[in-house]
Length: 131
Image (cartoon, rainbow, N blue to C red; front, side, top):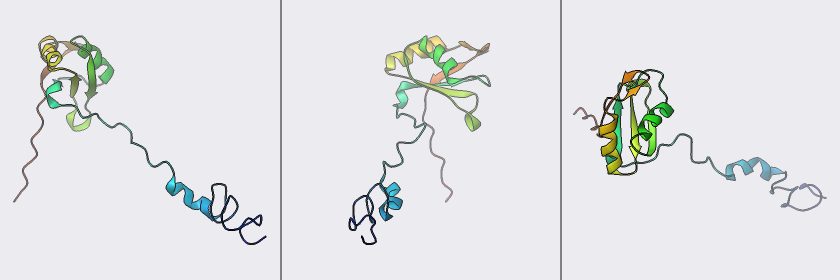
């Protein structure tokens, strides 16, 4: 009989360890599948494959921007920024040729009756630290 339950000793499904009960069950969640890969993780895309889009009207969605971007070539990633970057976004393509075509075709295109601006993506310089 013993303290492990069902007279099975220390281990197994009724004792100290195991999956079905006992003391081991309260520690099992720590050794589960983990926390996963997270939500909303952005893909790493070479800056030369991206174009900056400005003058995006308020309330525009990434899907609406994607429709315009697909007119110049198949888009790989589209995002409309919110908060500090509101009114701007990014469209990423697979090749530099698609980027060049998009820069020519999308300049002056309309999104919700507003003319958008496009330019090459330039990675922002880090702010200088005060000495």
